[in-house]
Amino acid sequence: MTSTSLRTGEEARDTMSAIEFHPLTFVDEADGVVVGRSDTQSYAVLPDDGAALLRRLADGMARDDAARWYLTEFGESVDIGDFIETLRELGFVKEETEKGGEEPEPEKSPRPLRFQRLGVWAFSPPAWAAYTALVTACVTLLATEPRLRPHTANVFFSPSLVLVQLSLAAAQVPAVSWHEFFHVLAGRRLGLPTRLTMSRRLIYLVVETHLDALYGVPRRKRYLPFLAGMLADVLLFSALTVVAAVGPSWAGGIALAVAYTIVLRLVWQFYLFLRTDLYYVVTTLLGCTALHEATSAYVRGRLSRLPGVRSPDAIDDSAWSPRDRLMAPWFALLTICGGGFLLATAALAVVPLLWGFATRLGPQLAHGTAGGAGFWDSIVSLVLFFGDFALLLVVSRREAARNRKLPR
Image (tube, rainbow, N blue to C red; front, top):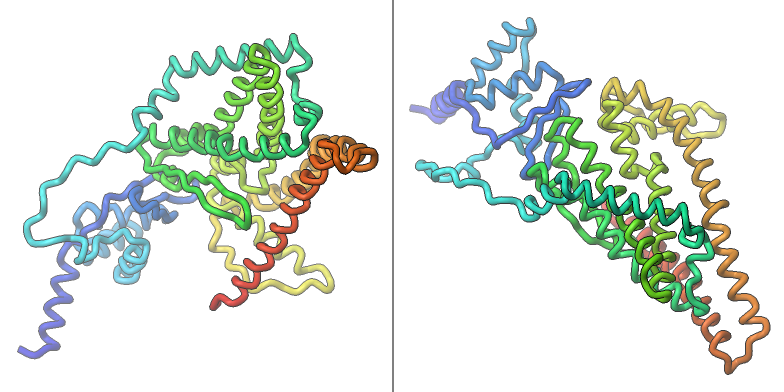
């Protein structure tokens, strides 16, 4: 028997045998079906006919039988080899190295996800009752005690600007981690492998939650995980307000200062063009999958019509779903409005904060003595303020230089 006939026999067996797949999730969407693996968080949007074909293959139908079924069902042929190769690139097909030996091991029950029980408890009826009581107490205190309401002056809880800067900087990582941890708990409650990671962007420590596994659940179940971080912020703000009302003055001052930064973080969530938590809520409501990317392509295409603007590379509109293409012009308009909202926020919140900093710093530098504590506190405060920007500039340039050296 020749090697050619051997290959022919192997190919025939391949077309007649079933293909083994990893466990897959199928979620119907407006523009297709989201198919993916929750363990690797690899997802793709397939047209309805492609998802139906994949279901047949995953159920054990042989390649040739699946191709014939597709022809009968949809009235056109399919390149089954190319289709399976695409599924293999997505990591959906179980490769030979992943199948093990001849005797399959008995299936082990999946290990329980860490924090899953905590996630269930965190969003249980008793927990919601406790959250409601805390927020109600906060609202009552804000209505009856004006000093507790968020205000720029609350940030300057101490005459020492250095103490203010260091305290607020130290509070940010725990506050952001609390926000992200609620995202994790909301995902774990659904049995999803949501996870928390810490990384560095330039000189800043960044805490991120990976929620890709939400693509494997129906849309109605995604809203709470997306909104859980904002819920955490509201709860933290409420708790800090209560502490400021009943605690000692020194603790109350710090609590109100941190609470002010939480208000800014909640406002920031409305900058949808920055892909905040509310962006994902809106795209889920609209039935979009890549609205930001589709809008960016739409804006680049419109700007290229202006004289003197270089035309972008050819844009393949088929990369975006029909729903994304439909909503892109509206989201572009919303992005422009969002830019105005950002400037308004800066004028109403950030500028007064800088002004308060300057009015406290200036007199100490102008009238303080070299031996006075206030003078040196102002000097160190300035060093911290401008040193942060200087370090950011240096690291940004190094990162840009490193990226230019990377092979493209």
